[in-house]
Length: 415
Image 1 (cartoon, rainbow, N blue to C red):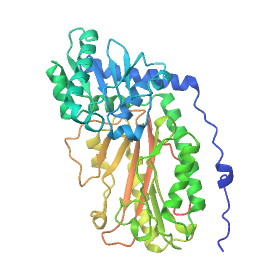
Image 2: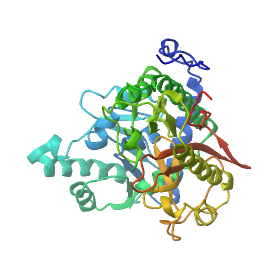
Image 3: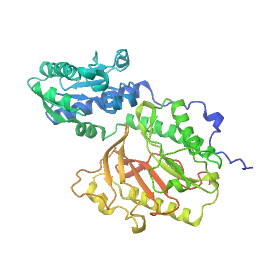
């Protein structure tokens, strides 16, 4: 029989109760105004009359409205228009016209015209023309003669219909990613709240991490805590154990945890208000002592993320960061992780700075104060028995970085 662990955090029973939400209505309103201002600043800087948004994450950022986020990631059933010198309009899915009215920065709600094939079938071309005519009318009304429209995602049928209306299309994903890059103080409050929810879920996972459990049973604890506290979804299922930890990017299944296994995971959690907590940890099942090999893998992964955390500072270019970044030992190259760090906000965001073997010196840009990033590591030899995944989420400050996650990095979180 496994001895009960000394609990430093609430039991599973107590953790079933929601945490105390620190985000006030005033904070949420400030975030809305800040984010809309960032979008409009990008429109002005890129000489665009407006921006048309289909990506639900971008819609959330610009309008603070949400409707069936995951479903609308692959069904273009709602969209939004932000005019530089005009209203914010949400075009909503059938039966959902009331939802955008919950956001104070939405000026108008209209029914969406569905022209993607699932929603329109043989009427796709007819509907696309109707949709494009409505968009073009808005640009004519509010653009002051400017016919440049930024758009984040659009199938060829829609893009052709917009161009037939005389619009010049501007790649809008760059504008959105640039807008989302710098976080306000109020956004950081929301990000910290999501991190608290995520880490509470990780303590649930730690208590559940016993031999005899399945990977999916452990993973479910993180989902539970996220949903209890108003979180939304988790972007991946990256939790594996034992031999399934190497190579990385396998997803959890019904494998039964064995005593002494490594268990590794990446949260990729979209929490309350749509903000992301993206951190990784690796444990020993039953929180026992690691083998020499497990301890060495963990030591190397820790060295990578701590080195890259410590060199990071505002004003540093991505090229300079790459030049100073931790060098992956040759024996770990084959299974290396895809990036040394990436941005975080409403989800994984720009930049995505590759690890040194893959970095291209033409990758432009640099770090600024109030960016939020994660530093990543995966360490496992090709053909090795196990691997270790670690990741920390950092706020770029005037002096360097500040860790946003507090969960222990070690192979035994209770040690």
